[in-house]
Image (cartoon, rainbow, N blue to C red; front, side, top):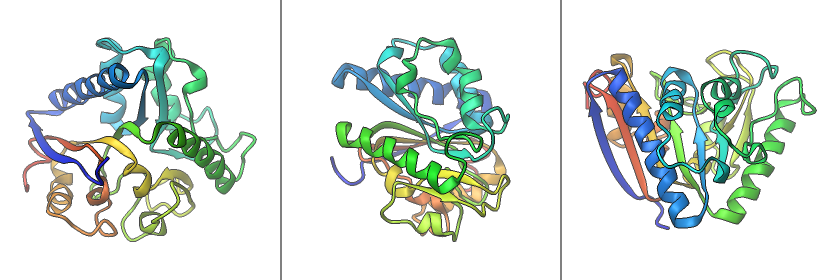
Length: 245
């Protein structure tokens, strides 16, 4: 696989159209991967659009074979397992509890009240799962990303140790500028082990960061600029988010 693949931008009329396009892309990539290799993997994102697209996939799953799908998360808030802030809990409520996934192939980050109560230990446990998968399969098939107004993706915030990480695939974040402060996240090197990266971004407040990332900003300043897939990187935007591009 090449280091970076094609890059594309799609602009949609509004949030509803954006979420529908993201859900369609999810189904397209997963079905194609399963046809080509017998199974597929997705790395999920949280937030309103991230969870909204899972709800759309639940309603229109196309030809996905749920028993042949590996599920990861790009990042997780290190809170108790029943905390509504957990991306895992939101994803289960939106999709995973309603489709016949193989639960052994769903790999969440450990919660703070689990057997890994230290975020560094939780990051180590998640890293082992990520490394084992990639050692066997080579790459994630689809990595979904939202983006913050300052350009963060996963829990990789501008000018932090986590976004500067060049080797580890998973790190603990103990001083996130956005609450909750403690998180576990995939790094830019992990994102770059994905065949297809899809950034789903809406809202005028994010337009400046979208433009900077698309123009080739330093990922330390605009982390989204470093989110690149080996086969494709696709920006799915609404008109407001595309306003300065």
